View (cartoon, rainbow, N blue to C red):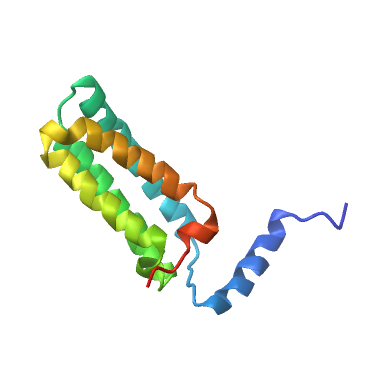
Length: 135
């Protein structure tokens, strides 16, 4: 079927979106996905610390923090309005809460569940909410 959309059309569509101020470079998506893998590995480690009593909260927290900062840096570079939008401000809040989760042992369990629920709600919210410009 020659009329069916294929992956071959994606770069042309991406080029058309560049008029809205967003920036991109070859491999940015792959780099973000690699950082996400490390971020989720850090989440798994923090989950083991909080839920299973494992040790090394600082190491898992550092992995989450470094990979998260990398993702934020790439997203903010690609979208100059990132920190004016709900997703950017929400991400800054998550980063602060993860730091608090690592250093505040008595509050780890409730903070863990709050950050997890907040992260899922923010990342899976409709685009009109995530991309809403707050100021």
